[in-house]
Image 1 (cartoon, rainbow, N blue to C red):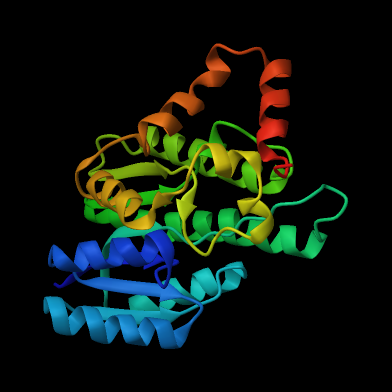
Image 2 (cartoon, rainbow, N blue to C red):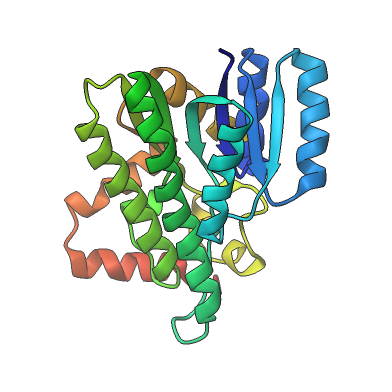
Length: 259
């Protein structure tokens, strides 16, 4: 039967670049995101250029019910999803008392609940087939919870912990679970306020294509987690040698708006 790699958040940024690179490697794809027109354009572009089968499913994963809908749709169409890249995600930046609660709850639904649902639903099928790969997009902030990104940092810490523990459970099952941990990436993800922080001026965003290349390599051939870029790797390890109180002051300064 024909096998597919499912990519969520496929219409922009890292997800878009991974879709391009995987299609170029002759992998059939199911691409999912909110924008049906962008997905339709991608389908036409990738299928005609690379001669692979590309299916698309418009879906809003900020509602976990649509994660179930996505799974049920692919099953009803007979798609064998042998690879899953949980890339859809959103970030929020701002003061604790100012960030709207409803937006934070939607972010938790997208970054955590839908990721868990898709990992469980497709992962169980992969375990039954004794074959499959799952990659979850975490973040540099999985290691470094930043002030003003409080809920976002927490969601990404969850993603990394969830991914690593499942990877350990499924070791030897034929299913490999990995985590991609990018730092700042040049995508529409960043708001104007994020771009004005000290962190983004001192650690410049990486091109999405470069991060995607590392992600594709990890997804197809790697194990464990991958922090993309030496500087991000170095920063991710700072908490090991820096006292918590000092580290949090450093992070608060980095997350503050540049004066």
